[in-house]
Length: 442
Image 1 (tube, rainbow, N blue to C red):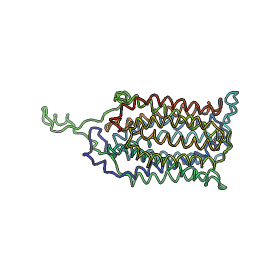
Image 2 (cartoon, helix red, strand yellow):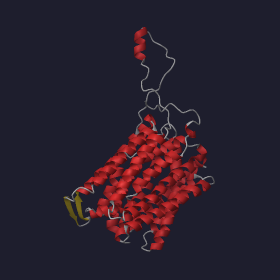
Image 3 (cartoon, rainbow, N blue to C red):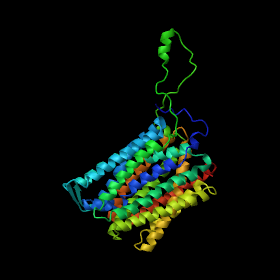
Image 4 (cartoon, rainbow, N blue to C red):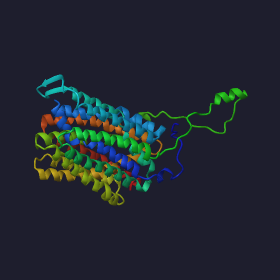
């Protein structure tokens, strides 16, 4: 069975699908990923890496997602969201199996780099396995874009902003429990082995939930089309057919860029991810080297950020989302978020946690509102494809940001956060145009 982008569901049918299965899938996927956030930097440094290697390992996922996400997004338009979500989650499961192997191989040195600017970098077998694991996960990593397309399929127009807020809240709930679990499980005598095993088991659970609990959000049609040539040969004359099935369309990046406002939205998507990922690489290194944080302290901080974001993206966004346009919320959120990056440069623990509140509030207002606009601009027909190309835009920015964040922190230390602030303030000025989208988002 293949999906026909020209075939639409009867009005309101896919809108009646409940939200909780996709929210649960999103939560479990985030939980499995976020478990390793507090201690990945410790693993990398223990196995011979430094800030640059940490950034490169982080960039491996979006580098391969850059190729995988558009394909998976396009397939989700043609073959259905559920099948592609299942494929993506199976890829994640196998990537965790590979990641787990790094704990059982010898700590053998493959190559040593001694650079005046980059420092001493030791490439070991476990680090190589980390790269392979993240590459596999990235290649099948279309789950976020396909999940967003699925949510757009089943969401009524008036509930769009609130539902994307709930999706973001389910993501952040995973980020609350994941780092907290990492802090508890990582404190045992088995160290990081238990959290990684937990991530593997969580991914396995997600496979079963998608397979047995997630309904499909799109129709399918028979794969074999009527063959007009054979009919003509039988009757020996031109037949006027009473039905016609439109052939599957090949969707290219050029087609996507011709959709009104999509290029502008993709540029914003790129800029937002660039600012975030410089921070995501620089902050864990900053916490370990400058703040002397432990795995537990790192887990507590990430859990705190996510807890505030769940509150903002849940009840707060649901309340104010009906009063203000998405464009205005993006503008306000970007100002608050950019201010966070300036505050977090401080070495004072209280100011850092205040910055965390700014981060959570700014991101909580901005990101779901932006996803709401993206889903509207994409439309129904190419929803999965646009979401896939948006993920690729984010992946390209993540590659640059994660690698650049490691290099920047090695060169200018906490000044890397100032670079993130400048980028998000640029997003603020670019987003002023979104105020003209009021009729679509109010």
